[in-house]
Amino acid sequence: MKKVVKFGGSSLASAEQFQKVGDIIRADKDRKYVVPSAPGKRHSKDTKVTDMLYACYALAEEGKDFKKELAAIKERYQEIIDGLSLTLSLEEEFKAIEKNFKAKAGSDYAASRGEYLNGIIMANYLGYEFIDAATVIFFDEHGEFNAEKTHKVLRAKLKETERAVVPGFYGAKEDGTVKTFSRGGSDVTGSIVARAAHVDVYENWT
Image 1: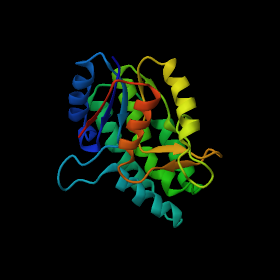
Image 2: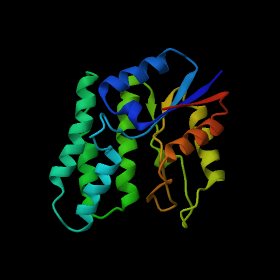
Image 3: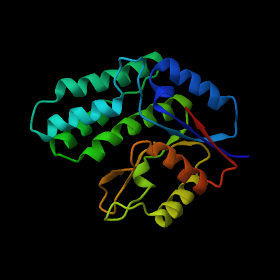
């Protein structure tokens, strides 16, 4: 039996939550493919990472300094990495994000980094392969989901990958530009992965 498991933002908001999710995944060897959301709120007065990214990118788009806001996002992820005692560094990823924000890569790109970075941490924590959704989930030039191409490419990739983490919420257009689904799109990614992997069960954890 094979299963896809998708975890929402509140399930992955902190290192403690990550550990709970890790326990859930490891409790069933059939949970082979994991679709994570970006970190949600740790408490009622907290801000979701996706909202932090939107706000940070808005400053970049206006040509304003966004270093402080980006540092706060980096801190959120570092807190999770440290809490899980991982040796992982996201330094290069944040350098690329800063560069792309300055180049005005788009709000879809900005928002997608929440899932992208959480996916890297999750794969590292579980010892699973990380598959960037932008390399396996496709949209056409009009921004419409390309189900046929996605199914073909993703199916081939998952056939050769026994256990993997595929970040939710985004994919890429023909030109490589990152495109997101609407809010809550990680659920959609989960169903796309479940179909491509021909799994028996798709579990959506919140």
